[in-house]
Amino acid sequence: MVRPVAALLVMVMTVTTGCGTSDVARRPSAALLAGVNRLAVVVEGDSTFRVTAERAGGDVGPLAFAGGAGLGGGFAALVALVMLVAVLVANAQMQRAAAVADAGRAATIRPLIPGLSPRAIAVDTFAQTLRAGGRFEIEVLESEPGKDQRQRFDAVVLLRFPEWGFQSLRANDPSLAAFVAVDARMVRSGRGESLWEQKDTVFGHGRQTLDELAADPELMRRELKDALETAGYRLAVELLYPRGKP
Image 1: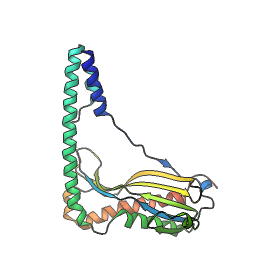
Image 2: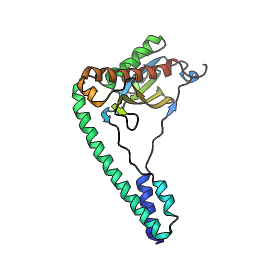
Image 3: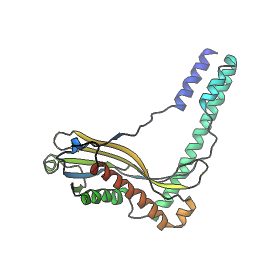
Image 4: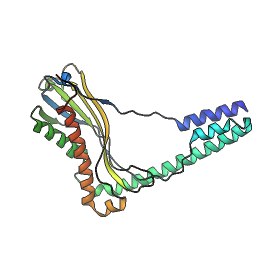
């Protein structure tokens, strides 16, 4: 029974583990930003609108199965692991079905908020907040500046907003929060030295159900705009109030 059990353990490890991503939070320092005044701001990539509703409970902890499996001999271990794989497969199927349902919700909601996007709101808030701070000269560009253009700037800020939309925050809670995923980088012109790296997910302040949002497009618009403006403001604050002293 050793070989079948070992094979199933490999299957379990394959199903229950994956490549995780960790947030990057390298705040800009006052020392690195000394002399950096002229900034080019570029938005990279597209933004995917998503709606992730609350998921029903019922997932089974694989470690609990695996721990009990070793107590009942080889056959008991094999049975327990077979049950575990069956549960994991069922969970994966449920997750795929939920993802399809979420995609349908997003496709229904997105047309109700024309003209709204991270590029239109978050980037504008970011640039306006920096200009109001009086320290930086900002120019928002459609694409990353070439070699000749870079001479006009001290640094280039590269912003990505890979996902935005509405997301459930707690199990057994139908309320959704507006959110936007943020990926920010700053590199010094010429040398390409990294001055700032940050990945974050910013949430709006309101909490509404999907039915409430779908019934009131203006409410939906306000909630998304709140999250996007908050994201742009927070990014600007990182540069206006860097860590340390020059």
